[in-house]
Length: 373
Image (cartoon, rainbow, N blue to C red):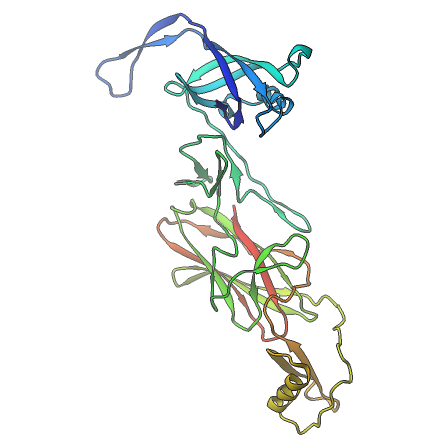
């Protein structure tokens, strides 16, 4: 049987103590006659007994640790549906001692009060806050709720929205997104590019924006995907540019611009690595097309991009870069927040758009984003 997400391999006995009942009359609002109901005078005591052993998934010692952990959980996380049990257990004690006579097998007992689901319901409230560090944003775009959680709602001071289904399941544990979170696979890329993988040890996915006006977008509906309230768009981004590069973040309500922020990535002052310096010589009259053709034939390189630097200088320079996809983005991840905006009407489609604004050699990576209330 399961108590919440804790599995007990063998249950040998369920002992529910009887309790006395009393009769009460409940007068409902606008009801013609009061309703007579029978309720228990006290919560119903229950004892569960059984055995723990090494079943190939866990040892008896590991199961014993799970059993003992039950006594530190609230009844809201101890839902069970087994035999004639369908409700919550307010656990008062749990024990699984080891005996020398039965090494590898342990008896366990769990004692508490039984709260049938037909008469009791649980309320679990999760408050949100955001913290950020060098490799992650500690904000719950995902929240783990108790096994069997239903009627899950996200609330603001102005509204509440029922979440229809978990974002995904971790075993039997439902994982919900309280506020819209858009990951690389959730957005629409203007060039239909697929997500890339970060070259760092974290192997994070991201959307790559490496040409002018290239963008990603994410849509949601107020009152359905998100409750009314005041929000900011929070993004985790980085750029490998050695010069300043701009990204524009726009929030649209239909065709109306709600937010239009320009974010500038400062140059990271890294030196450009020069490979095969002095390998090629070119005349100043050689065309850009001939230049690329020559380099390609010499170095067997494709997707080259040649950019003229310092055109007004008497000493012109040409920077040659390889535009192959999946190149590492070497900058540092940065948390970008827009100014606040208000969602005051239900049924409107909102679009969040992130666009590379400048035509330079920078690559901008967007790891993920969400709405912060």
